[in-house]
Length: 114
Image 1 (cartoon, rainbow, N blue to C red):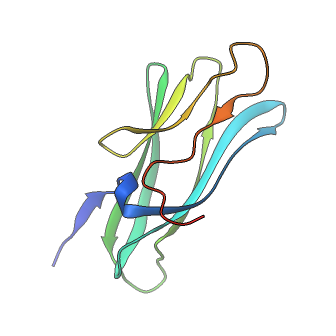
Image 2 (cartoon, one colour; image 1 turned 90 degrees about the horizontal axis):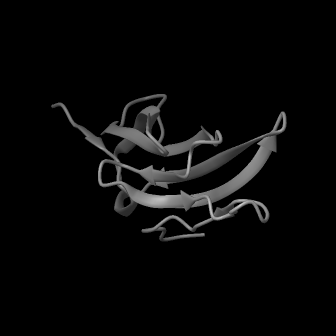
């Protein structure tokens, strides 16, 4: 049997999200767990679409050595204004700094546990 689908916010229990500096450059780290039994995280990609970065996490049937846990890092270059999750594009982060301070992090939609 073959199963492959892109994780959406409704499929995920986000465990942590933070913006931090690495070598002077901001990055967004998001971690979580796919909230379905017998499903694992596979093929994590970040795709830039203009001023938006899209996090795509492929889901697959469980097999030895794989887990539903994931952590992804998104480089927040100057032209990235928001980060969305999954094919549906639910927003998980938006740059609300307007030059007045650090970027603001939105709690991921669909988060069921913190």
